[in-house]
Image (cartoon, rainbow, N blue to C red; front, side, top):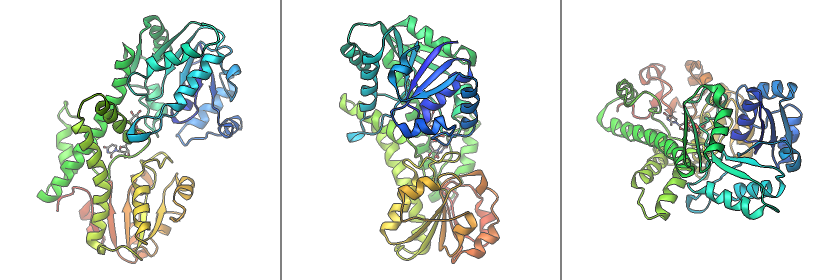
Length: 433
Ligand code: UDX
């Protein structure tokens, strides 16, 4: 059993701290946001993550997990301090490290005994060295420490699974002994552990996310070509995926990627490349294609309803950037809703989890109670998030509630022939002509 402190109780920090507690460690999670800590003290999770609230409750009851806003309390018994604060997109796509820098400075000023400081946040290559400099410069008196990079590979909506059954653990440090100590925290997960240097570990994270984003933009480009050549991209992806070198994952064509990671990380990697004298043509194309998909899906709507959308009633089925999360950061639905509202369309939206987020983010969006309430009076529906509960809707009922039976399937959730049989004017992404 080790004593672990996690700074930051967002999507990454809270899952990391709770899962480490569930492995039998004593964990203290700190956040400077008192509202979040108050919610956690009341047994509520400030984030939507399936299974997390129950796991938090179990570990708080087991006296393994605690929450605080106080750095002295958080570091008093700590052996390991994970920095899991946000690294939002800054100017020109560069990752904004102000929260990481502030955290490192406060840790330095507070620590009273040797610590292993672990960067869990996604940070540009070289940040580990920068954190070490900040700690060294801000300690009132020298106290031993080591910095280790330990990037996360957690997907929202399956973060607990991704922590407890990881494909690999990546560690990077100039201090091999410190890296080995962090590796011991993960031994119970029986996953491959890669120990390398700081910069390489930081690059593994960016390269992994950028590659996954590239797969998505690749299949979306193939989808757009399929539309011109009469091929079905879903079948193409299936045919490709049996090749072990390709695999079936991350070949789902549609409106493209969103979320708080892929958009930010691809931009940050391109920025690192550009500012260090290289030309990330492929990364720029990945971003361009992803942006185009959103426009392309709305163009499909214009092809059916006419170029001008003012006065048309459009229903967005799904608002979160993907299923099993309430997160709407960089969500295609948010961008598409704003664009149509600017054209004075009447835009309605429904999502199983993100209605509260949508109400704050899109005040002019009309919120529906369920998919059928959403369909009422619509000239078209656009599916943008492939929630399970959308997979078996009563389509004849949906059609009867709409003003016009137009269905734009931004995630290829349905089959064209089936939808056409129901009488819809149906458009998917890359589903042949
Ligand atoms: C991602 C990485 O998967 C994870 O390893 C990293 O730690 C954080 O970023 P996340 O952003 O939570 O996780 O979601 P993910 O499931 O990867 O999906 C990202 C986006 O890609 C979503 O908008 C999703 O809709 C889209 N996507 C995914 C596709 O458009 N097609 C696909 O085939 C797969």
